[in-house]
Length: 407
Image (cartoon, rainbow, N blue to C red; front, side, top):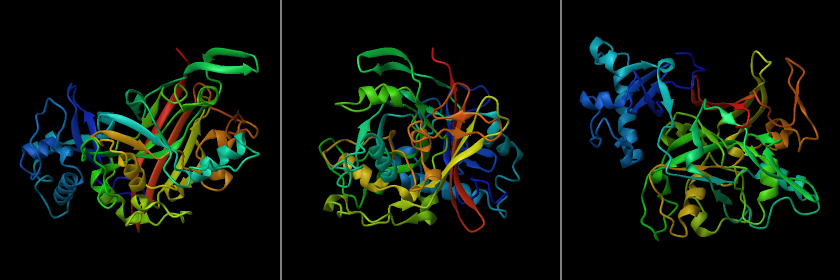
């Protein structure tokens, strides 16, 4: 397998898909350019130790959490070994189990129950503060004490490839005039996200030492943003229509086991987190993140930014612990996004708001000479991410979406 493939044996991410005209969704594992139908492996008794399921209802193998996913990944890896003929030599089984990725309909990996978006990219938060509050400290007083977040909208979380309609909303035209219409400042946000399993009753907190047991896996996230709508509406209660119209995620759920080789310590946190947010484990990951843009006139995408997930201030464990710290019930299918991940240098920013510095420094697209401050209709925005091992990569694939005109 190509060592640059994001889906080698070391990864084996989970996904949901429909194949062969079937109305029901099935769950699979990706290897290279192929998907392996896990349900068929369970029915063939080649994957054991999992909960039972009904082919025509929501998949239930994830309900046991990371321990069950670990069992499945281990047994699938055994079936894919060069010296194992169980799958390789059984033509009928291969026909039932193996699907080419380009021949199926990929879905969100888990049906989304709830969506929360954090604001844990400290360089992004600092840049926004410098733009909009130049006469004040860039970070608000609470930033270094808790993972700031808002509740988003689960119904508008969509899988990579879904077209993104330009949203409409109310914006300020001048000091005395407001108007309703399509956003003029459509943006992307480069983020990671993680899905959870249920694990605590309402009113029950969760110790940070066991919070990782509730994380099923990680996806790439593009939290599309309408900056002009957001700017007018966010005071005093925060994001609403400027954020709720679309959030795109990658179709592959990469487990923390697969990301383990890339686990690193994060940046120093000053002041030290309160005791319940002090993680006993390194909770950050050395993951390369890239942003690519292709206009309708271009023949190929152009990379406009590259960064790294280790630039987050608050990590997954701290984010989820904070979420549960008031007794909020964490449920299976909850999606938590990190917030925009930006680096400290201009070429590493995770949004056009920063890359064009609020529209004052337009980006030039080399192939056509077009410029961009924000996204235009026909633009396709692509996010990619991976951890680089010794001779292999563990990646998320990509999350992409094309902007289409407002309804």
